[in-house]
Image (tube, rainbow, N blue to C red; front, side, top):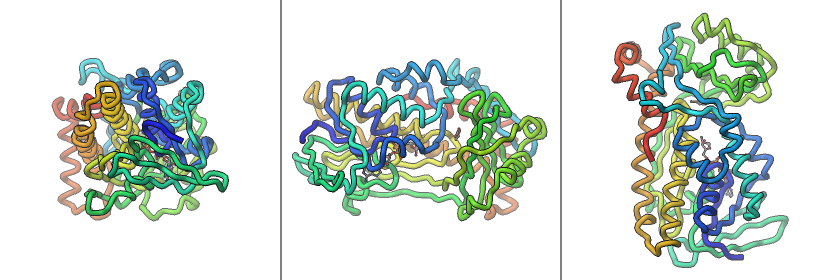
Length: 390
Ligand code: APR
Ligand code: PHB
């Protein structure tokens, strides 16, 4: 079997890259370790930058998103039972974000890929990548006990944080930057109307809480918990009680409770690999970087990588120029580090750290008071939240 670009991983990074390359006439095969249903069962964030929506439109998957996505022109930051609205649209000259679940983005991309007759191989076991430092790379895997091989020109490592691609790079050729936060987010999905029509990110003495949503009838809530917390210790009732304690009285009053349909704990991490190209292997999405979810940047960063990489590969096939391929790592990393900075700073502002000294605690309060009083500070948050230009 042969293709032009072998894509490892059918998450948003791999699927969007495949869709953008298809538009550019570049052939791809996607290899995914899990089943389609398993991938679609993962609940992840749900805030899309306008640039991400534009990329999905370019990839031909905007119809349902335009119909069902919720346009948000602002969000709230809570501190000490007070609430500050960041007016995204007013502060950024008319921009907004769209609330639409990552699961739905993934489903739309999978459906469109299937409709176009493009190859995606699910449940590919023991995927291994070979010879990406030569002109003739290939990928091998096992499916239903049978060994397979795919020859290709390039390999796109879109296989997430725990994937095989980054792990296949010799350790001397890659540098890793990492910060692990001493807490996680306990998330609950429930079919209840959201307590606020816009997201609320709340810093409270008991810990951070986030009120988000998937639709007017489906809410997504999170509370900060210790990193080693057992999800089994959290009954629905305990979750709802804790959430209410961390919100300002008005928001707490409006929380409608109901049975959870998903409940899980995600660790918080900042992570960047450098560089993102190793000969004919590229890293994109969570394989290349992780941001804590506080800034809602994970999916949007993956989309940015897919854009830069698709442009570079299209240029290779269309114009016989490798300038874009040579520039990919630097171009993508410039934007990645800015998103890392924003996600890290919002995480530091909004969470409670057991290790914080009284001085650092006062600094956090002063930081919030400054944002409250300064249009310039609010503008900086807004321009990052709606997404820096691609
Ligand atoms: N072989 C094949 N596929 C693999 C392998 C492997 N060895 N390892 C992992 N995968 C698959 C995973 O099963 C997953 O479906 O790669 C895919 C990676 O998808 P994601 O984890 O969703 O990562 P990405 O596409 O980069 O999307 C980034 O996901 O985690 C969120 O916050 C993040 O929103 C961001 C987005
Ligand atoms: C979510 O809806 O899951 C969500 C929203 C915003 C974030 C993180 C997660 O910053």
